[in-house]
Length: 287
Image (cartoon, rainbow, N blue to C red):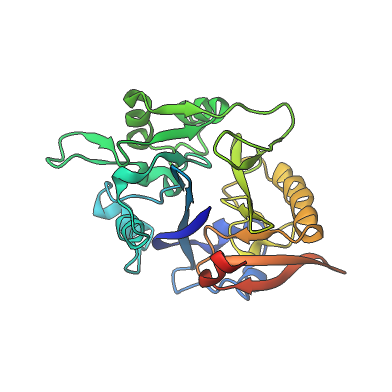
């Protein structure tokens, strides 16, 4: 197995929304805001090269929305999904599987693109199977009022209509050791219904793709929960259980949204689980 970090671009979101009830005087220490109260975020995906499979975990925002949409999120930097996949030595046609942790636009927007004439949508990875789970898919295509702006019709319906959509079976417990793609997944419900958090066994360590269970290293304290989460008290408990295990078992955490820290480890302290080490992206294949 070989892993590739896929940078799909950087964006900005309101710091207050990202930290919920936590005062700015606290979160601004780790995630400084700009003049519009926005913090820097990454849209970082992971490409898994494993035998005949090439599995992409999440796809970033994509590029099919209007400029006004992207201006709202302050996109910056030169990184893109296409460039990063090519830099890893592959093309879109090589991807065999696209695993979507959940269906908010910043995680799945790149899964669908315009056709050449911009008259219809098509799948960005024509030879891939697209993976979600049945409960989350139903939740996304019949969105509640709070998440409706994050579940975009143009990101979802082309996948459903393609015949390439597949569902991972939801386990009786909240964890499946192998979801059928060579890695496990933790199912969590605080941020959104049945978000999936991939767990990979890699070089003798457990590498966890954090998605929105832990957006940045600044969110490590348990009460630091996004205002976007639909069930913040569930997030609190999910974070507590996960972070204690991550510290005790020395997990390496792949930070999807942390603009500065792609990989971290955590440790137990008298204040709870806190940051232990930050690791450079280049260390991923030398863990």
